[in-house]
Image (cartoon, rainbow, N blue to C red; front, side, top):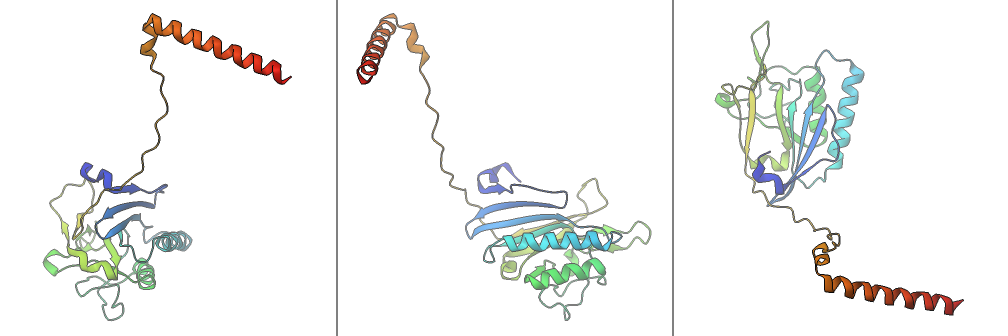
Length: 225
């Protein structure tokens, strides 16, 4: 995040190797960002089931009325079958749906989420090139609630960005206005001004008052007995 947004964000209390959360305060209310790294296609079914169960639990934790943006490497091909998945897949998808894509689309359909795509000359399908076939595939996705999709202006891939990885940089431009969080200040701990100890007259007066106070306390203690 940019340093200018420091006062507008709340980092999640915990994170794992698969999930990281962040809350951004905006003029339209809090927007929740969820960064994920999904298992690969070769992972076992148990690992995939555990991942999508955790993803389902995380999505349920965010209020339905709050904007939700899920982004990261899903290792999934959602395909271009808009008729089969009219809520989750737009008109500019590519590839065929694989097993990971089927799992992801089922989750998106259940939670009313959609994959952010754009016109062919900017489409995000060229996010990763297969090392053998040299075909480009859409694995890095940006997903949001259907009701929030109107805030997405463009989603595209930047092949010229050097990210030191075999994936291209995928970005979305949103219509949002960050706001600062108003955090309550904690009461400061009381401090003793030790600089006054350099004044001899004040030190003598303090000692006199302290001795008098102690004498009165001792007298009251004996009187109560």
